[in-house]
Image: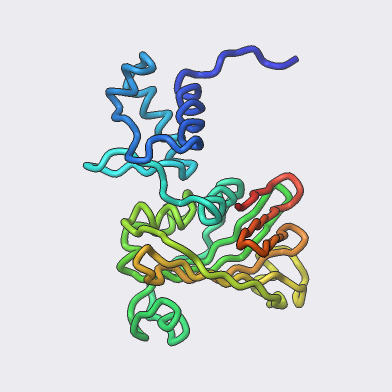
Length: 247
C-alpha cells in the first residue's frame, strides 16, 4: 500500500522553489530567508533545509554576503551537473603538482605552475561508469579538495569558487583500458573504452578545467543530432535507468 504520510514542510518548499527555478524565475537571485519564511509561514530552519537541498543538487549557489542565486550552469553544462548528481563518486586521489607541458598548454599556464589533479570514479547502481581525471589551476582550486569533490560536481565547485563558466570544447575517441583503469571500472585489461576530453572555459574564454574521462561503453552512450539550420540536440545516456538528456 502506498504511503499517505504528508511531505515534510521543507520538502514541499524545496519542490516549489525547484519548479520555479526550472521556469526561469529568480534570475537576479532568490528571495532572502526572511521573505521565504513569511511567504511559506515557516521557521528559518525549515527554509534553510529547503535551500540546502537545492544547493546540494547544484541548482543554487549560496554565497556569504551575496545572497542566494540560481546556478549559472544551463544547457549542456547544466545537464552534465545533473548527470553527476545521479551518480556516486569515489575520489581516488587529489594532489597539487607542477603542470606538465601538456597540461600547461591546455590551461594556458606556464609549465611548472601548480595545478590540482583529481582522479575520481563515478558509478551508477549497476556499477562503475567512468574514470575521470581533471586538472585545475591551484589558484582556482584553492577552495575545494578531496572532501568537496566527493560531495559535489566539479563544475558547481568552480562556480562557487568565483569562476563564471562559459563554454566547453569536447572530443570523443576510443582507448584501451590499462591495468589501473580496468581495475577501477571492473573490465578486462585491453577493453575498449570511450575517451572524452573536455576543456572548460570561463566567460572571458580562459581555460579553467581540463578533463580526461574514460567511460564504459555499455553504460554510457552519447547521441547527437545536427540540423542544417544550426540546431543541435545531444543526449547522454547513463545505463538504462540513469539518464540525462542534453539540449
